[in-house]
Image (cartoon, rainbow, N blue to C red; front, top):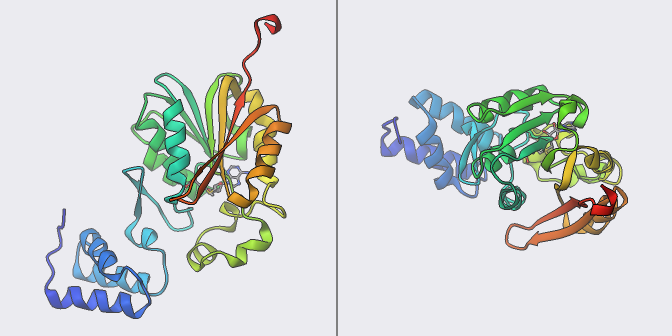
Length: 269
Ligand SMILES: C[S@@+](CC[C@H](N)C(=O)[O-])C[C@H]1O[C@@H](n2cnc3c(N)ncnc32)[C@H](O)[C@@H]1O
C-alpha cells in the first residue's frame, strides 16, 4: 500500500532519472520505489542509489520469490527468478514433518519457499555473516534454525541420516567466468556467493560427497547448475552414491540436479 503521496512532477523526475541511468524498466521501478519510500527525501536517495547502479532489490530492501517477500540486504546474494524452479521442485517432494536443510542459504529464500508449502523442520546454513542475519529475518516465525559456518560442519549431528531434502543453491560459476557476469552481480554481490572454483564444481563436490551421510534413505539433494555444467554435475552426484536426474525449465533458463539416496533393500537391513 502506498504511504507516500507524491505529485506528478516528482514521479516524472524519478522516472526520468532512472531512464537516464539506463534502467530498462524505469516506470515499473519508479512505482516500486514510490511504494517503498516513506518520505520524498528517501525517495530521492533511493532513486539516486539505483541510478548509480545499485541492484533494485538492494535499494528496495526486498525481492519477491515464489510469491513471498524476501528481505535482502547489501552484500547478500539476491535470489534469482530461475531458482524458483528448484524451490518448486523441492516443495513438490517435501511433506509435513520432514527435515529440510537449506545449504548455502543466502537470504533463506529457498527455505522460506519450501516452508510455505509444508510444516517442516528447517535448518539453514551459510558461511557469510550478512547472509545469516538476513536468513534469520526471513525465516523468523518458521521455527527454523539458522547457522553460520562451512557447509555441513555446523549442523547438529543428530540430523545425520534423517534429512528428507537438502536444497543447495551453491556457488557454481567457474572463477574465470565471474568477470563475464552482469554488472549487478559482478560489482555488488560477494564473490564468495558466486565463485564455484576453477571448474565451477569445487563446492558441489564437497556438498555431494557428504550428502549421503545426512540424507534419510530416499531423501534428495537438489542443486541448481547451468545447462552447460549439468552432465558433469550429475556425474559428481553419481560418484557420491546418489541417483541423479536432470530437470530443466526452458522459460526460466533453469537447470536442477536431483540426487536421490537409494533406499536400502530388505536384504541390506
Ligand atoms: C548462489 S548463493 C545462493 C543463496 C540462496 N540459496 C539463494 O538461492 O538465493 C550461494 C550462497 O552460498 C554461500 N556459501 C559459499 N560458500 C559456502 C560454504 N562453504 N558454506 C556455506 N555457505 C557458503 C554464500 O555466502 C552465498 O550466500
